[in-house]
Length: 172
Image 1 (tube, rainbow, N blue to C red):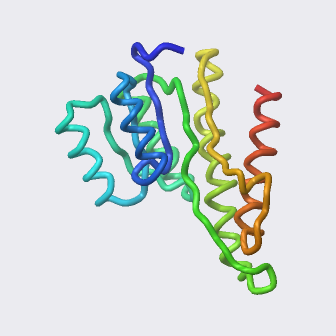
Image 2 (image 1 turned 180 degrees about the horizontal axis):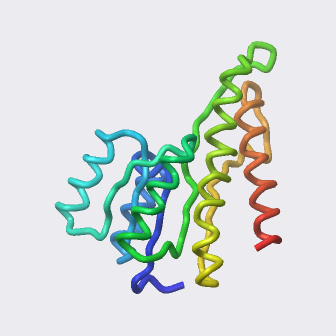
Image 3 (image 1 turned 90 degrees about the horizontal axis):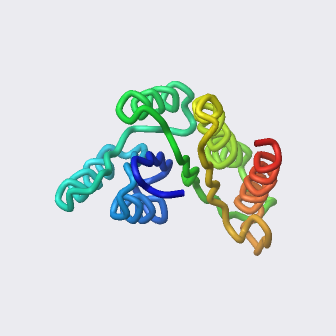
């Protein structure tokens, strides 16, 4: 897939791997929409992109909020006309021994790592289907396959990402 006029939406793009991917893809000429929750981190990323004259702009997107997801996707579609690549990178960690896990913490973990990922995917898919084109990349972790002590909650969410990714690969 060449990068000429390719539009990429990356969730969780204001930190870590998401930020690095956003900058790298913009440097390679992709038009990048770097999504995240933190206004401060988005502004910092926008300043960096502007200083390097990169085709990157940030946008507010909370994968746990359906209206935020829909608003962000509409912004990308209005500005770029399409989304060629979705990189589902947003995620959070939770490390604790299983017997001490708080169910509310586990629910928040799944809301971000699974339901948020699926929420964004379901919002983007109709546009990709209409164009009969697009790629979706799901970022997971080796913890989705191997589970060290205290990683039960996190690993279970990443294992769910692996299973959902496999299903989507076959369904799409």
